[in-house]
Image (cartoon, rainbow over all chains, first blue to last red; front, side):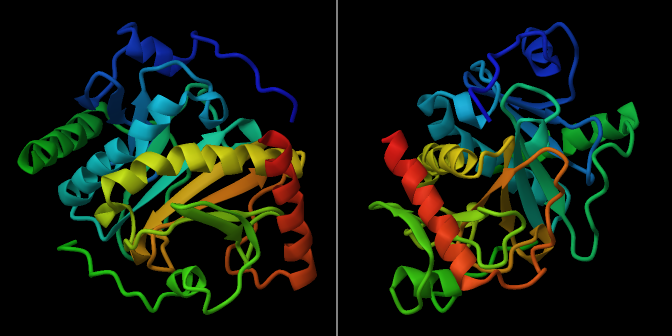
Length: 146
Length: 146
């Protein structure tokens, strides 16, 4: 791979960050937003998205990266609680070969239960009412933790 | 999930950190060690392991987590360069349901090439001479980057 392409702010997460399209938000602070993946690989599949623009890990700024895992842990603990999960899987994809499909840095936080394999990410859109209910479960878990 | 089990320092990564068993090391600093996964899912599959003891993300200390992603980026850039990769996949597993098999916090950094799916993690041990050569490639890439 040569230099990675420059950041393109027409990606869907940039549009969500600008409020141009909606999301099922679970939490937001100055640096990050967390919202439901609309094609979840398990119930409660949440995305952690830094507000700072970067294509992926390879071109991200250090300040954002320093804050990413403490924030992801907070979300991970909340999804585990909200979905009574037995574990949690984090995935972070870079470039198409690495599994990336939206070119704004993000991390997948997926609650897991014993014996339940991940669904395919391309398995289809989850129903809006399910996503709304799941986001509310996580928001409640976050409130109880703080 | 109730409270996660306490850290058990008999795990294989703790033994590697204590020097009781060998590894194919690519880099080490005060906070982390990076070494080859002996059951790689792609050539160059590297593990990033904090020296601080924690079972996984859920019980890790904030200082370690703040340093984890900047360190992982450094290793990610090196494996991309070393293996002329088209992308890189990071995975971080928590508890058996989340995919975790060694109970010391770690992150998988896997160079990826277009059209090459990940191998199964349980696909068997890589040959020692291959792991040695791959570690050397990454060490060289790290030296060139610094």
